[in-house]
Length: 299
View (spheres, rainbow, N blue to C red):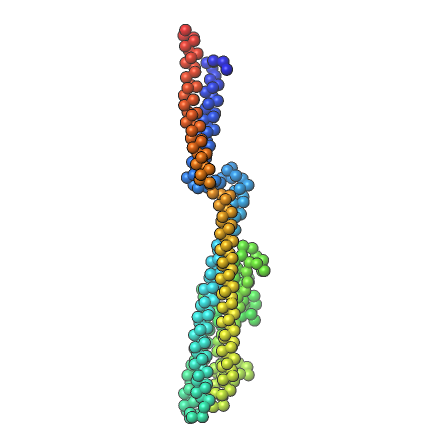
């Protein structure tokens, strides 16, 4: 390489190498400070696309877990109210047993019947007032006899859709929770009971005796509702476990694509730091080559 004045090629080459090393050093610094291997599409275009898909999947799974937990809270609310209704039905059966014996007068049975009707009214009040986030649970709005609770209307009725999957496949991403009507009339007890039921009143000995069968049926109907809710709660808990495993493994895969390997990147950082320092030192030397030419001219 000739010694020239107009162009110091050695200095230009060293400056280019310094720029390259310094740029790579800056990239390593950015990755180490952020903890991410991919921050822009330029870092890894294909990797960025894969990472964003995984991130959306992770967020959807995490929201699905929250949705399932909300459904469990709703079921527990309904089950707690049914537990109170259970106590009322047991008391009503106790009153029917009391009124079915012949040792009470008609006036006394009317007093017993008044408590019986009060219990029935309380069951209806509980069923109509039990709600979760504004959704009534025990008044029949979520029963299977209504239309599907698909959210097409502003106020949907019918079995509630609990959505927890990342797609919209009926066999994979959601299922329905149905809760039958638990009012006193639906259970067939109290004066408001409809149809051919014997549980309307215990004001006479005969009515009290025949009410026992209706009360047994009411208790069985209530137990079926609670058993269905219990099995659905267990199902949701299993779903949460499965979703948590999916989210964890997807997060691990996303980390492999997106996160920086600190040990490897620190090695690269040190390498580029040394190259940059070396290039700075050599650029200082290369910039002094022009003075050698001046010495020849001056000589």
